[in-house]
Length: 197
Image (cartoon, rainbow, N blue to C red; front, side):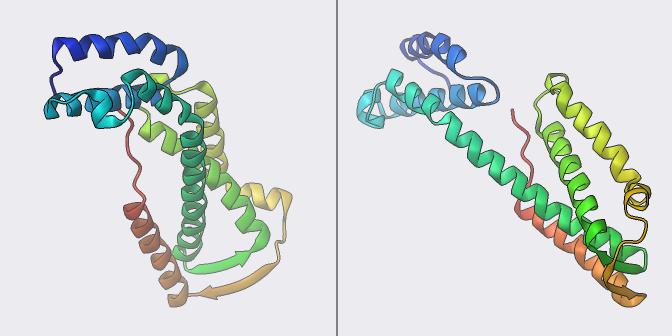
């Protein structure tokens, strides 16, 4: 996608405004979209305004204005994915050891820890550069990972005898655990993490 000199000048003239009003990863996304829009008008050999219904400057302003709503939508989608994943992970881990027990305290503690662990991992996995990941995310990952690895001990400390609402053992437990793993795989397949460029 090679722009003409004239379109390159237009693109470069918009970068200062973009750099002031947008941060990563949105900045890179908008840069690519602007280049694609300029190239589309160039390919059709028609004015930008005619192809896109607005000037390049107005197009940039529109994309910048859309950033807050995009962030809200992405955050909601990310936490929904994290929550569903934590439920399926709980089903898998509880069932695979041969004794599936559902205790509300156990489930709530596991879900909260898994929710924050999955969130931190998703940010680390999708980050363009690991060194750019904020310290808060690393702290969240380390703390939630330690709690996840020891959550049974943490549960016993705070709730020594949780009320078991539902329990099965043996083959039914394994079936539930494997079902949770398959469901988790299918859910992640339909909702994959995409690395931000």
